Image (cartoon, rainbow, N blue to C red):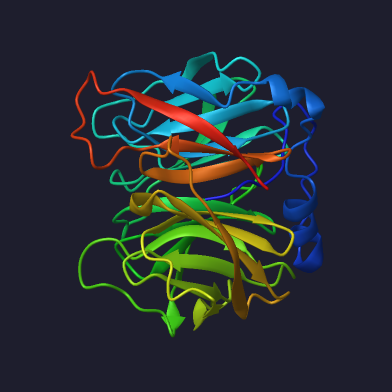
Length: 315
């Protein structure tokens, strides 16, 4: 997962973004933290039993984090680490991928619930709920053009819903071309946009490959990795300009690649590790930091299991 720059308190600019404009929006405006962020905490706790999975950041500076346990969403002030619940959870619910738009709408992937929800972060009220008929595990989301795009980890299909107040409904785009779908379990996970704004990038976790996907047709092309054999356990994706950060969850690793404009190749630049990583799943950028949530998948979840979020420098 990754950040689309936004603020929950700015007026809507609901115009159709396309091509390079969409890419520039994602790449250039990812948060406006100043030098003051050096004094902000680089680690803060989440409620026991929360089971975090997704994270999104606007320019507030606030982070929104979703719960795999019940679908609740929590907002934290990054200056202090203090937070509160802004969307209550429910039995059978889940909140995995999150993206916050400029108009304050938060798009939420529903994981095993198979749902897609839209939360107005200014009022903390749901404005839309979608239920794909073929949903399995709706995992991650990116804002691209005038729509939000979601991966389905259990089926070779993308879902897309309109951004803002448009109500033209849910659409499905089957994945084809060179896409490889596992017979069972998770395949598609994190999703991003290419630097030139013409396509999407999707990571296939179990086989460790990145794919370039045409959003109009769903045709997928394998992205050639240089300097790295694979990105196994790839989860959240964050792109800053031509740099792609791939969170490899169970490896407790962030792999950093240089992309060409069309994301045909990805060249390894470096890796980021931290002793505080405990199966981080997704990341979001603010200023010169990446914030990640520790899902702790190797720790049996209980109502008393502790969880946290951590920040590392972009370097």
